Each structure stands twice: as structure tokens, then as C-alpha cells.
Amino acid sequence: MQFQALADSRVAMSIVTLNKVNQEAADRVETFLKKRPVAFIGAGMSLPKYPLWEDLIDQLAAKLGIARTTGPDLLEQAELFFAGSKDAYQNELESAFGNLPDDCRIGLKEMVKLSFASFITTNYDYSISRAYQETQLTRDEIEHHRYPDVEPVDCQHENRVFFLHGAANDEGRIDNLDHFVLHRSAYLKAYFSDKGEGHAKLSSFFYNLFGMYDVLFVGFGFSKEEPLAEVLQIANRSRGKKFARMMLRPMSISREEIEHYQQHYGIEVVPYDPLDDSHRGLDDLFVHLREKRIGRPRFTSSLAEMNRKVTNLDQ
Picture (cartoon, rainbow, N blue to C red):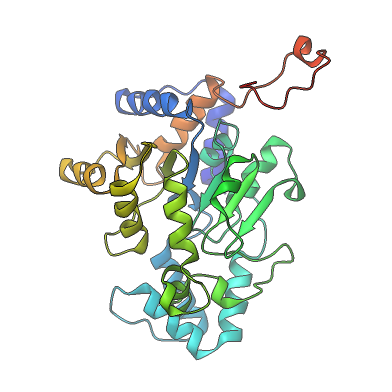
């Protein structure tokens, strides 16, 4: 884990100095954190320990001995894995995602110490849970919500991680392959009410989420063909109270893309400088925010001596 060792050493040695682009991005995120948003974590924040989705499909094809199609439809490719040998497919997924990783990127370690309401992800791995270990929380103290047992109202509680596309259980097993949303038939059941047992659970979750919480997207991108994009557009048109949405994206993003995210999805795009192929700049940004101690409120000794128990800082 040379990448992680280098990242950790930077934190230990000195305060991180940001360039102009990343300082501006950090300032905007700092202001956004005052809203106590939900963090939406994408596959980019699981690197380098876990692959991006396309690389995952390539790895599964090699291990299962099933030819990789040349088309871009990753869901259809995963459906071939599912149809070819359910047991082998499940075993490979459990082998890849069933255990808590031994490490995770420094950006995640710093994010879980910031003032996010909770964390949601369409990833399958437990990198976020591993990051929580840095805060001295054990896996048992972190509440995991796995599809289909997800409700957006639970996002208001701390130390919650929502695996919207499913995850292995605490024993490292997958209870139901249709609840591990990677192959096409599972995807259709999760998002479309006329396709089966999922009853559009995830479409409803996303719609309610965007109508109830401010959301920060990190390490995330999506195409206009995804159901999430359609739900975001509907929520953008119909929402009453204007909950904010922000997304960190590499500075190579075009002005046209930024305007598209804002107009169609109500997402404010904040460009950052990756600095290198590992996107070290994104890690540095969150290290910087933690150095400014923009974290969850802590009681002082004088507050701790009060007779009345304080359960809500707004009281």
C-alpha cells in the first residue's frame, strides 16, 4: 500500500498546502458543510483498493471464464455472469467485497470526521466502514443499511452507511443476489416498479433523499441514461424547498458539463485539481478541512457538567 503510506506521511509531516484551485474548492465545501449534508460516495473514493465498475467487470469475466462482450453495457455483461453460474458469480463477489479492507484512502478517513449527516454509496465495498475505524468506532458501532432495507429518513442519524446497491452481510455473505445490484435483472427490479419484487425501491429512495437532504457527491459521476439521472431531474423540477446539491469533479470538466449538471440535476459542480493519477488533490482537500477542525460538535468539560442532558444542539 505504497500509495496510502505516502498519503498518510504527508498528513503526519505537515499541514497540507493547497493550490489556488483546491483552496477555492475547499472553501466552497467548507461553507456547504455547515448544512450538515449527506455524503454520496462514488467508486472513485474506493480507489486504489477496489476497481472502478468497468475494471470490476473485466476482472469478473477473467475469473469466471466468461467472454467479455465488446459493448458498453456493463449491466448486461454482469447478467451473463449471473445467468452463467450463480454460485460462482456469488463466490467471486463475496471474495472481493465480503471483508473489511485493511486500509482505505486518506480522503475517506478525513471525511468520516467531518460534519456529514451520514454516508450513502452505490459501491459494494466497506471502505467507508474501514475509515470509521480511524475514529475508534468498531464495525458493530456503525449501522449498515443494505438494499432493500434502506429508508432516507434514517440518513439523519450519525454513523450510518447506506449501501444502495447492496453489500455482503456481517458474515461476508450475500443473502440474495437480486439484492446485490450489479446484473441487469437486479437493477431493473431495484429501479422500476413494473419489473418485479424491488418495487422501485431505489427510485423512491433517491427521490425522497433529494427532497429531504442537502447532498455532496464525491468520487462520483453518472450518465444521463442512468435511472438516478432521471430521478434527479424529476426531483429538480418538483421539489418545494430548495435542498442544495454539490459535486466535486476534476478541473478538466468542461463549462458545458458544469452547466448541464446545474440545469438538469440542480447540482453545483466544484472543480478540483487532481494533482496526479491517484487524485491526491482530493485527499488533500479533505485533510485541509480536517486541519481546520470542521468536524462534528464536541462538548467541552463545562458543558459536560450541565444537569440537563443535551440531545440536540438546536434546543
